[in-house]
Image (cartoon, rainbow, N blue to C red; front, side, top):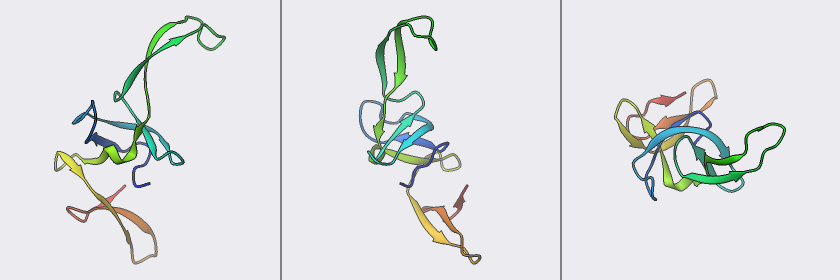
Length: 103
């Protein structure tokens, strides 16, 4: 997957289209990502030892990786990601629009 934990992404499809957020978790087996503040669901939580107070809580649900795009803060929009090998043999992610190395 081209999206990694900690990346800032923009949602390009679905009910939260055009929202941006930070990737909290990547689920590669199901090709999904959990993005901060996107695809919020309501969950009824019973009290347990970790969560003393039960009740209704809001939390993020996974969204398919094809519905998010890496967000470039300089261009202020979503961009595609590619890969490139550097002279020292490292494989790095690059911004397809500008050719800049990501990370």
